Length: 302
Image (cartoon, rainbow, N blue to C red; front, side, top):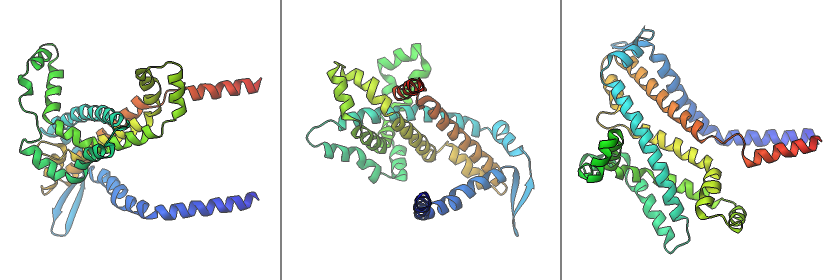
């Protein structure tokens, strides 16, 4: 009987891997191999010749040029880092608030959901870039308000960040489409009995939100944060961006090695941001479920 169950399990696993094989093959060819080959090229000087590309060992020379000698890469990398942290947190918070509002029973709820998701379908990256370049996506003149002057007197870095955020607020709303759908999906899967029990125990909506809803949706918050960071890193392709620096290095006759070093450092920064999101949004060690299991094991041992 056990051998039969193992055979059935193996067949199901084989069918699953066979079903995923097109994606696995595509990932290995178009993602994994270029990623590894980029690391390999970053330790060489690549020169274009008549016979093809000639590789000359450079050690960590490309990384030294990228981090210490290039005057554009590090400032642009720090600019992306500040933008990614500010935008990702803002997008996650706004997406969650909008998802809470769109998940409430009301007339025309489907229409409102469609309106928030429609820009993701209609406005592609180049279209949004053209709108931003024309100045139609920014809120001009916010830095002239009295409240911004007050914030600037006490915390100039905060005033600068708020001004930069509101100048590109349309971009923030554009990125909230898919996170809103993810949050709505998580909210619809909440256990209604838990919420009813909390209301019976006289819990306020604010307490239910912070003590039940947000802790349960912690994995959704992590997923949205990772998705947002990756999307921001891919979209960061305008003038003065890191991707523009990489493209400029690739256009030179011997810049593939340096461009590979740029790309690998950029990927490492994105991975560090994702790792920080994992550390910040990881599940606490002592959750109610884990405490209950630990007590059950303790009493069963007795």
